[in-house]
Image (cartoon, rainbow, N blue to C red; front, side):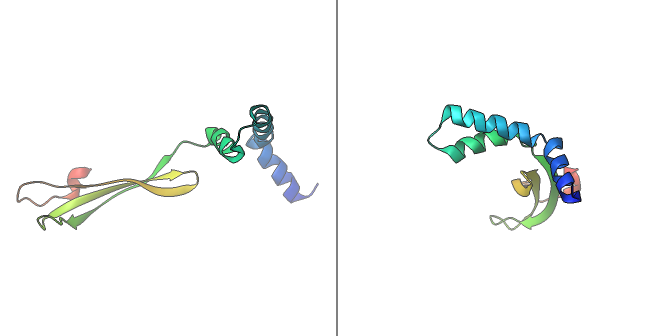
Length: 105
């Protein structure tokens, strides 16, 4: 067996792809949904890893309302092998005190 073929077989077995796909295709045949690819997507996503936080960043911005300096915080996650910005917010004080990003630690 070639090295690439051995790696492929090992990858498939390590990730249980053969049994997962066989079960999914058998269930697809039994269900016979009108939207085949929607059904497959719904079934396969059940095996996806949960999202993980990839970065939390913060920087200063000027408020468009009053020109005061504020802090912006952004949270990015790895979701299905893609990094996505999932949340961002601007925080600041109503007083004349400038915000320090150190306060967010």
